Image 1 (cartoon, rainbow, N blue to C red):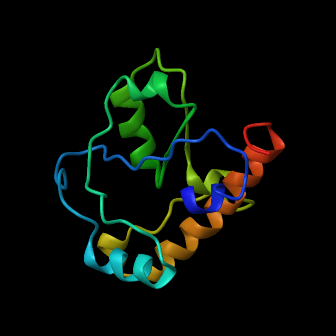
Image 2 (spheres, helix red, strand yellow; image 1 turned 180 degrees about the vertical axis):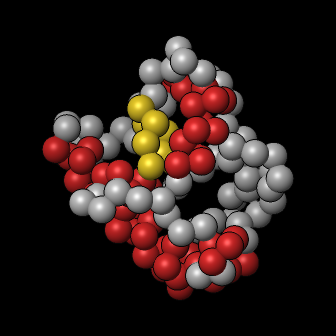
Length: 132
């Protein structure tokens, strides 16, 4: 997402955060790293960190991959949060959950869904004056 947004004037901060503690401090999973290596995406400084309640005020959008993520995000940030919480594929013509590669073992499908979803999200941001 950050690499795609670099082509636009966008005061955007893109972070990846977890709704659970299982992976905190861990590096990018090897199957994901393989895809990122192929694309030339630097993830060397990436390690899992947890979403915190103040993120609900700090960010304009918090994007989940599936409905269970959205519920967990809303639980963490609380009712007073100003961030819009949506699934990534809610921005596409075919809203749905992203296939969870932990269960499908299909990291390529998950990448394709995320890649497609970020294109639609960026279009939404352009259409609504967030980026230009």
